[in-house]
Length: 386
Image 1 (cartoon, one colour):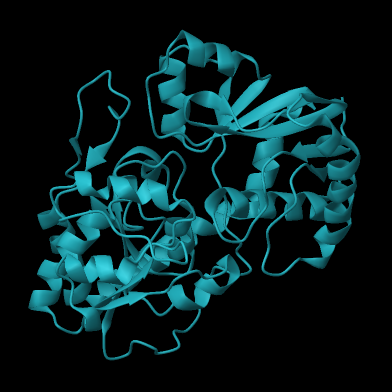
Image 2 (cartoon, helix red, strand yellow):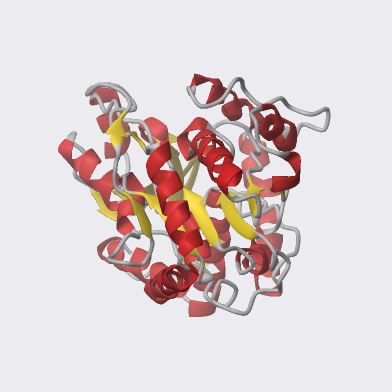
């Protein structure tokens, strides 16, 4: 069977991981020519790529003529292969069913039981965003699953000269939505120690969280005093939270919301990027983009990060300790150690040339993971179904 359309059920966006994935997948499907994307949710974009406009117009027609009248009822789209975004426990996020249904998942919680297995079996195939997601699922009775990682836009994220915005500072980048899984508590704890030794250090953060409630679990950490507060505008008050947890205000920058396409210029101004994440269901798109820009990255050697750690392409946080017993939902989560984070920051600070070489190696590694290549690999992983 050769298909002309590939349905995408989730919202395309330039501001969060799933959205960026969908946006780049759709754009690369358009460039390839066949199959072309069929959108089931209107995109949320700061700027609409002209190539997508006809497909957005089509989505609005589908919304008005099919989805809205259906309400919450299942909508069956015969003859179309549909790609679905799945949540933890392989839960569906939509009411669409195609002629062939492919689930895509980035999960961070275990606890795979008979109910989860049954939900997974409802799909003709599942694609996982990391090899450990695939392997963990297979070890727990889900066999119809393959691994395809995210990609990066190599036209945007590539090495280029720094603007010199932090020429007199040692700039440390930390990105990803603010939540306990991403390890920003570890970032603050390590940075406080490092900044006391090196007052020229500055922590530059992109921690915007479109779901502020998920940031409240930060108080479970032994490294911070309390959860961040939410401002009247609905945004997490990152600057106040960092200051209340001991980070000097003149050594902390909150970038706020930045469109994905504008991040490359910011990343190129960084000396190092720090990702002590406890768990990644995927391969950490923000870390991939930092590496692609030639930034020396410090990565926790666990879960999805293991797919992008190779040789000397980063600084590796090797001391990874379980945080919960086997059988719990977070049995695969791992904790980086603050002293090792500080030691790797010291390595990058003390030998800038060596750090730059790691950044160059990371950028070379990322060239193969362009969205164009990953779109081809995604289609290859379901070729027998389309």
